[in-house]
Image (cartoon, rainbow, N blue to C red; front, side, top):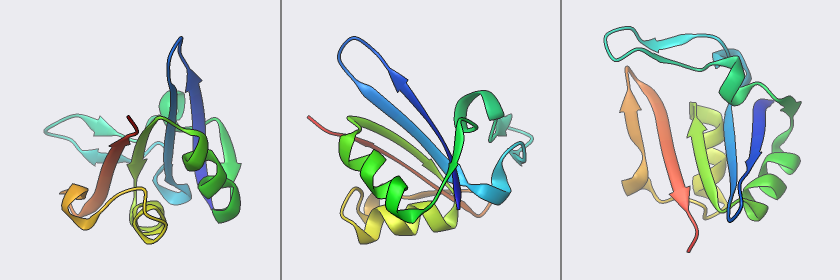
Length: 96
């Protein structure tokens, strides 16, 4: 399960998805990185819905081992696009 929030702009659909257990957790105190409810905490979704949301999105922000693996497996990102923040996988994608 994942937490997801969708932000619609004039030209883009940004989706923020994080692993369920990361919501409201501090990932890196030094860099002040936290999986904030305001950004990721829209609704709780499963893998099928996560894939559908990423298909519609033009921009994606993904945080957590499970969602990053799902995104890689389904071709939204490649391994080279994954970074680790205190051991937590993070990736972003943009569709042009």
